[in-house]
Amino acid sequence: MAIVADHFWAAQRARQALKVEWGDSAMKDFSAQAAIHAMAARVDEPGKKSKVKGDAGAAFQDAAKVVEAVYTMPYKAHAQMEPLSIVAWVRPDAVEYWGGVQVPSRCAQAAETIAGIPRDKVKIHLTEAGGSFGAREGLHIILEATYIAKRMGRPIKLLYSREDDMQAFYYQSASVHKARAALDAHGNVQAFSLRAVVPSIKEPDDPGFLAKVPVDPSCTEGMRDDFYYQVPALDLAWVRHEPGLPVWWWRAVSYVPNIFAIESLIDEAAHAGGQDPVALRRKLLQGKPEHIAVLDRAATLSGWRSHQRGHGRGLGVATYEGYKSYIAVVADVSVKDNAITVHKITCVVDCGLAVDPSSVRQQLAGGIYWGVSTALMNAVHIENGGVKQSNFHDYPVVRMSDAPALDIVVMPPSGRQPGGVGELSNPPVVPAIGNAIFAATGKRLRATPFALA
Image (cartoon, rainbow, N blue to C red; front, top):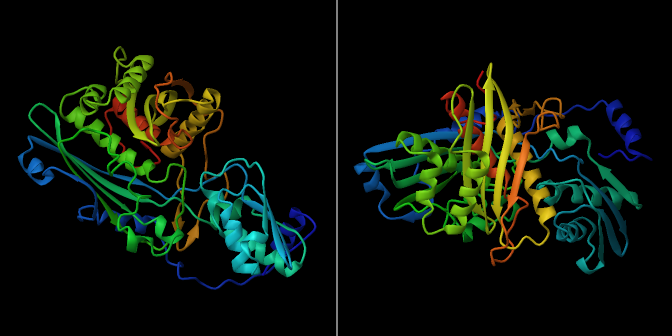
């Protein structure tokens, strides 16, 4: 059933006036918390290996100390500023679309599937849109608009309300990760193990994909050959768990939970081994001078060496390599009466040749604020199949009053080709803030959104 009106508000009022009786779906008993508990129960499974190096089992057996922890993230919405929208016009021999479509070929799929129009008769007018972060990559809104437009025989604009966008579509999956580090008597990391328990992202988008590629690359970013630390033994694996709730791409995809676990555990290992967190990371990055340079610059700019930790204020660091770029982030955080305040984020990036440095800084700033939202605010709660959040009043994101000061440095061109920056900066912000909270309070928070109360 669809309501078509002359404008959005008329359609909204008409929909609100409808008396609809809904039946229960197969998801009527779904609980986000129960799904997370089920994931947590599987963190010790061997999984499908994404990276193996050396003899991790022997290293853990011979370790002077083993550090391990479980890190959890909830379901998260895209919450882009503009809800999804598209215009479709289905004619007998052609289909035309207007909209900020992230993957234009989806329009050709929809035209063929719904209208029976061949791809060479599809015209797309790509418009600017206020962000997407993966939400506008989906096919569902294009299919729906095409179906309504075909039935109406005229151009149709489909615009989801914020509540539709927040409650009825796809989220980034909840995740549970178990990370372990084997330390020798001097606090050096001899082995690292990671289990990422999450559903497949690629299989729903491309059915049959996992029959060809058993380890989903969209679930194992940063934990394949791209694992950036020089550790003698590695045991990294993906444990596929399918709670049944549809999930989708989300800004930086699996880098977000994977880097949260890796960078948090490395920090815990540093403290357990009596080492400075920056110094340990420098050791583990030997042979990677460009990455070390980014880390050193971030530490210097943030005042890392002179900063007095504890007493409610602390600095936390995180770094990684992704999208053919290097990044290091230092968060300056205070905690008072269990309230967490992020005062400043220092971010240093080497993305090779920055073709447009101003645009690079804007992308990095947007990703940093996204990371702050992820660390402190974002969570979708689902009980008895119903999504509790509906708008920004109960799914908060960083506002100007919450936004920390930013010190963003883009390293001079290094001779490398341009690397990516659009999704680069949000993953390390979460562990940097978590590590800063520990530096300020001595308390480890291993589940987002971080809360001390």
